[in-house]
Amino acid sequence: MAGRNKKDRYQGYQGRGGSLFLKVVIVLLALLLLAGLIFVFFFMGEYMEYTENGPQFRPPWVQEESAPPSIPSDPVVVDDPVVVESVPPAPSASVPARPPAPEPIRAVELTPEQLAGGQAAALAAGAGANAVVVEMKAPSGKLAWRSQTELAAAMKVNARNDSVSDGARALAEEGELYLIARLPCFRDQALARSGAGALKNAAGRPWTDGDGVRWADPAGEGAADYLAALCGELADMGFDEIVLSCSGYPAAADPPPAWGDDLSAPVAALYARVEEALEPAGVRLSVETDEDTVREDHAGGITTALLARYAQRVWLPAPTWDDTDYPALLAAAGMGDAAARVVIREEGGWSTPQTQG
Image (tube, rainbow, N blue to C red; front, side):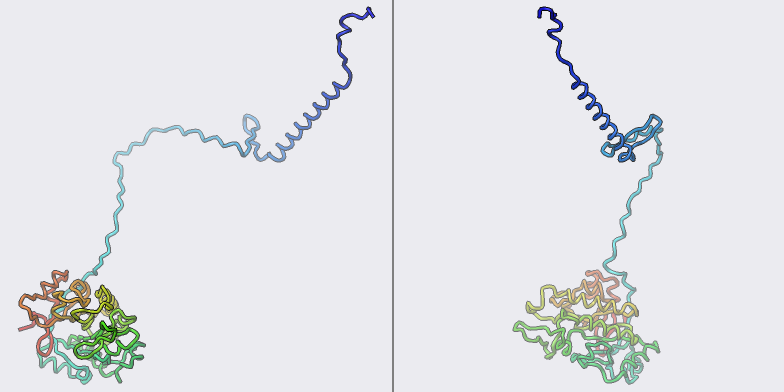
């Protein structure tokens, strides 16, 4: 055994098993490479881009490179920059433009029967008047004409015929006299008994004035709408001016709390509705009130601010206080041409100060 050398003693065994394992690994790697190529070309082909530098693969999970910055050009120099300033809209006027002051009047009072009987012209001439005033609603709620409102029919307050309304239309067509309708508003027995409801006293019973007449609640449902509708019908008859009397709360020294804290709100609502009803016909809205109201010595809801806003004329009794200056008081509340918008009661009728004497 001494014949074997040292080289043979330490040489390891190399059989066929090692080469077979290597071949298997190579085949598997080739198959994986082929599967990868097939996947890329068949399933990811839409992400393959062919450029002048050769095909490039851009998978969806790789962000697009930002576009290269643009090469700056020479700066543009603006000699006179234009500054655009926003122009605020003109404020809406809370008070519409007031029409010119009406012409001075001397008005004689007529009954509805005198108007229907065609006596207006003769009575006006005898009094030296250029206008007539007719009270078209009684404290009972009875109307001097046949209204088309549902409430008037329900309360049964319509006139029996159209003689008064026909007389007004005939007089308006003649055009010789200025026609004024006087309309008591909330001093209305029928309206107080309707759905609008009556003013209540502190005991919760219907409030009545010194003549025993009930007043409708100015804040009652439908009261202002009804009165505005009546004014619209009077305008259609040809009246030139509508004078609202009793258009606020009664001048009670201590009104019950049930009447509300802000008595002017229902009054303003009435005036606004009447103004809207009269505007299409161009008929004037006027308000009849008393000296205490203009002096603001009682809280009946009618204020000088409301008169300045809505009334084209203010009809008042002759002043009883030495320091009462109607035009000055109304002018202080914002009424323009106040001296020309005051109408004062006199014996047998009414007149503006310019026609008195």
